[in-house]
Amino acid sequence: MLALAPTAVEVLRTITSSPSTSGAGLRIAATTDGPRDGALELTLSAGPADDDQVVAGPGAQVFLDQRAAAYLDDKVLDANLDDDGTPRFFLAEQAGPTGN
Image (tube, rainbow, N blue to C red; front, side):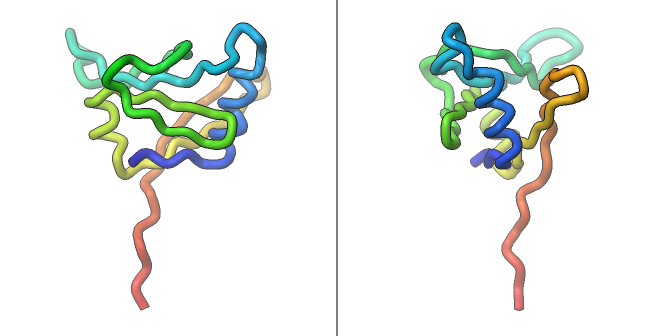
């Protein structure tokens, strides 16, 4: 399942902290047509679609459509705010177990 880095949770709380976005989350969906078929789209959403997987952190939610959830199963969502306050999201691989 997609994991949320602490900085991603903090950015999500920042962008959903106004009264007009209370309870909202980041929705990640795979596009289904044209030359960008399978590309990931990120949008602010009032709530999940019926078949979305919900990933939650303290005060933050991410809604994943089925295709995006399958692709992001072993990823970590991280984020930061650039100098203008614009959120930038990026993905990293989850760290696997270490052997001794």
